[in-house]
Image (cartoon, rainbow, N blue to C red):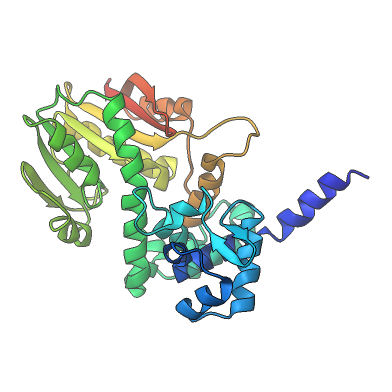
Length: 329
C-alpha cells in the first residue's frame, strides 16, 4: 500500500480543521502579538485564550509553515507575516472573510451545488452573500477590507501591464470603493474617472480617498444605462455571474461604449491542467456563492464574441490577473 498517498488523503479529509485554525488565529490577531517572541502562555493571556489549546492550534499551523515554534516561544514564519494587520500586503482580513459563517455554510452545502449547478448562498441566507452582509455589517466591513487588500497587490501589476494614457475618460463599473480608478487617475493627470456601483457602495466610496477628477454614479448594471467613456473597466465583475447575466452586462457596456470605446476586462484567469493553484479554489467559491465561475481567456473571448465584441489584446500579469482589451465588433 502507498502509505504516503494514504496519509495524504487522510490529512486532506480533515483539512477543514487546518483552515479553521488559520481563521481563528487571524480573528484573534495572533500575528500582531509576536514582536517579543512570546510563549503560548503569554500570548494566551494577552488574547483571552486557553494556553494549551492555543499552543496546539499554533503547532498545527507551524507544521504547515504558518508560524514557527522555538521551544516555548512563538515567532513568525514568512507565511505568518502576511497575517499581520500592518503588513503592506496583509491577508488578515482576507483570511477572516473566508472564515465567516456564510462561507462555511456554503462549503458545507457544496454537494447541492455539485448535484444541481445552483448557488447555495441563497439557501443559507436570504439575499445570498449581499443579504448576509446587510444583516452582519461587521462581516461586511471585513469583506470590504479584504477586497481592498487583494486589489492593492493587483493594481501595481495592472498599471505596469497596460497603458491607460490614451483614455481621457474612464468608467469603472462595479468598481467598489474606487481604488483601481484612483490609482489610474493618480498616474494619468489628463484623465477623468467615473465610478459606477450600487448606491450603498457609492456612498462609502465617496469617503474612501482623493476624489479629484472623479465623479460618481449609483445604479444597477442590469437596469441602469451605463455611463459613456473612452474606456470601461470591468474588474472581477464577470466572474460573479453566469454566462447569461454576463451577456446582459456586456450588452449594456456595448451600448454605452460605441464604436471607438475600449472595454477592459480584468480577471484572474482560470487555469487548465491539474496543478494546484488559487484559480481552481476560487472557481468553487464562485460556484457556491453565485452559480458563477472563473473562465479561461479563450472562454472570455467566446463570451465577448457572442455579445458583440472582438478581442484586441490579452495581457497576463505576474500576479495572475489578465487584462482583456475588447472593442465593439
